[in-house]
Image (cartoon, rainbow, N blue to C red; front, side, top):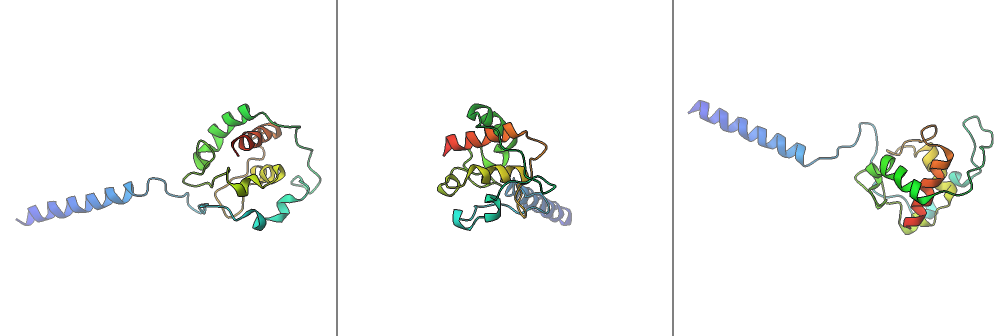
Length: 146
């Protein structure tokens, strides 16, 4: 009888463990904060609207003249959709990028966010990993979805 009770307790603990893991299929990376939504456009960081500068403080090179939304879709699917969803409508970690608040943002806001990430969030900096043209392509893709 004692052995039977131990088996039942063991099975109950195993069931609790399985349910605990199954109920949290997308845990946040350690040390990063989830981004449920962004603040309204009026409260976003105004310093991102300033003239872009490089890491040394000098003015950055001007952005390429326009992007290709089709190329941006492929880049977005590979590098961004995991957090922001396939159609940029938000995912488990990243917010929607096609809301009215996001539509109101300038291309430079998107450019600086992609280049430098967002402090205190899971948004990484893509500077050095994406070219200027690839960033413009992603912005063109986002604008095509808005």
